[in-house]
Image (cartoon, rainbow, N blue to C red; front, side, top):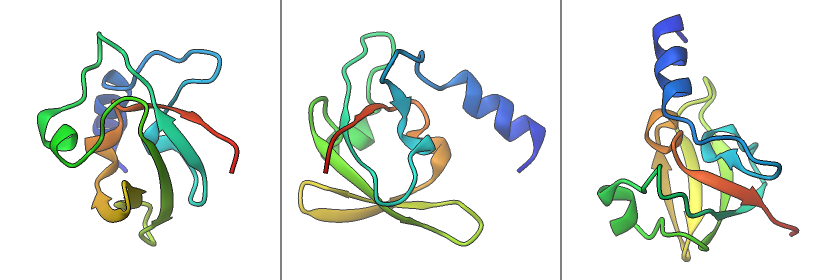
Length: 95
């Protein structure tokens, strides 16, 4: 990963709260709930796919080089690039 990519991803990450994390930082097998942050609205494309606040999801696996991630949400699976989901804030939940 190039330094430019890392800097661009860091600029789009949500502010870190005590339990808030970026969806792109979750490890496979972790279940989480999407948070609502007015300063970081969910992009329209992801909202149309079901990525709305208070929705539970789970990171299932990642590609061998770490990108993309396979995420299960609302009963279906979708593969997304880390850059596309870096701005989404989640709170890990108990399994």
